[in-house]
Image (cartoon, rainbow, N blue to C red; front, side, top):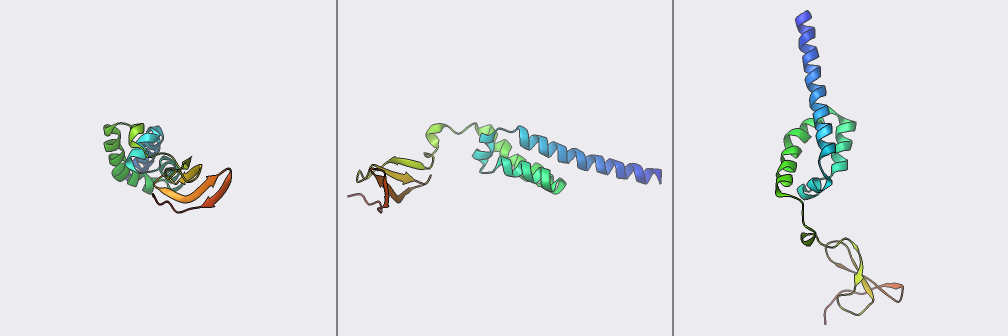
Amino acid sequence: MAAFVLVLVLIMLIIVGLHIWALIDSVVRPDWVYERAGSSKIMWILLNVLLGFPCGLIYLFAIRPRLQRAEALGPVSWAMRPPQPGWYPDPARRHDVRYWNGWSWTESVSSGGHVSSDPLGYT
């Protein structure tokens, strides 16, 4: 009976230890590592906190190696990043500004503070 209890306690300590390791590792990694790996730091912290051990195992054995590879590459330089979503000078020069969604120009434009729609087409 004592051996069974000892084995049970050891198993519980291993589970708790792996959970704590996953949680600490997910918290201390820099944000840019998650960004470079195409993942979300907040998501993995919340999953580790809310769902516990199963997510901790997934993090440690699937996500953590990806993060380590991304970290080894170093931070993404600003030159490699597309501009953040926002209003920028209209590349077609038909309006004051046009909205960039982070990947491409949209039809949303503004001239003199009036927002309208104009498909982008270079002439």
